[in-house]
Length: 228
Image (cartoon, rainbow, N blue to C red; front, side):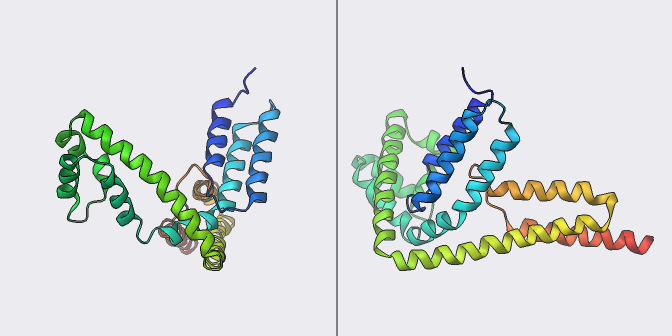
């Protein structure tokens, strides 16, 4: 019998399978064990699954950021080279013309122009070329990160520090909830929403958004205190 929250747990499993390759094996196993534990318990709630996704995402954050930073510098150039090798001359020429002024190939594919300027066979050819290129780039990135292990580890440390700093800002905002019971529920709710960004299926927490909330609530709380 399927778990009551099978689809959510399936999403969790897919996210685990997509964790960056150089994340330590023990961290990946912890995520897999956590998924298995939740799957085995029919009383597992959506909240518990969400908390697990957030925990794993918070753990993965510095490894993913380091992995991307190590590999992203010339990724578009390498992607273009690999994709163009797999396109017919006519299709290649059209893609070159539409991306020659800095448009990314993957942005082109997502645009309305892709549907308008390429027929079905051409779109399929380009999409398949990108999928194959992504596989090649992932392999190249793994090799690059392994060959630059010291640099990778330094990046992981830097992004770990950054994650701690971002969480510190959220904690600063949450502490403000204690200043006035009138606003505590709303502030805590905003902090919960910001912390959802750590989940491996959500967008990363954004410093600008956190600071904006801190500044806003600092104004609200002080205005209330002055009026009192």
